[in-house]
Image 1 (cartoon, rainbow, N blue to C red):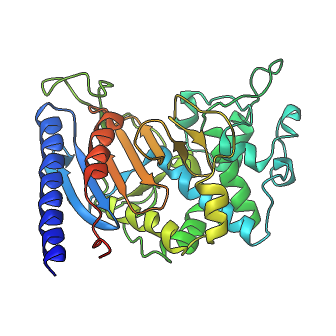
Image 2 (cartoon, rainbow, N blue to C red):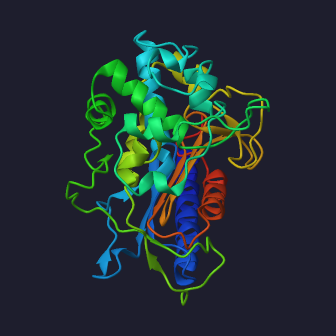
Length: 361
């Protein structure tokens, strides 16, 4: 009994210290003009810190709250990868299928690209120009215009791009005969009660959706620097590569589903989500490509799964341990902060915390 009481005291003290340390990190970043957004920190599947700072709309001084929906940019790709793996589990497609089986009209030199190549960014597809978001395109129109192979005389290597996942979006739509937004809602959002997550549509008014602001400082500027309204682009064109909005609470529901196997089987999770699919450490992404994440075994004391996103002022970050017990989730609607640096500081505080379950005695 005495040991349990001592453990409880140490646990409470440790958690309180971590909470204070995390709050100080965020307050310091906010006061320096380096953060505007939401943060959720999980230790052993328990919330130890939830912080909202700044405004979702600077013009009208609308504060960010737990219900503020923020576009998550390339974190969207995790949702698209999960949908692909769900279809794989149902034998509706195979990861070594050639993509021309589902998407006609691709360049002749793209005939040998597989679904796995798209998922891990080894397709050899060229990055799209900024003009790809100046007008509204369906996924089919987008692919017809911007699906182009690059460096035809060189061996295919890792190239992070949005085209891969927009092609994946089109494959999912073809196989399911449903629009991406409907497919996402039916197979991920509804089962997990992710009520504050969806796909951006310029033709709809989305309540509580944050505005985006940028100045491209990423932690190097200060509070006096001018912020600019994000350009008027068609975010919906990013489709399964970057068109989803969410909240930190909803994103934790997604992360927890990997633990509880609500969306994917344990076998699929261990085979594809937590296991590198390529034996190449990508410095840009800080990890080996899995399907959905990057497996980072260099930055922290134990490996983590990373996912990040950035479109103009909208920036996102997700750090998860391999067993999906610990998480740092950050969403921002400005690019004034270095989320990688902020996330690392917070995750190290999580690592220092004692386990939140009693020790054996």
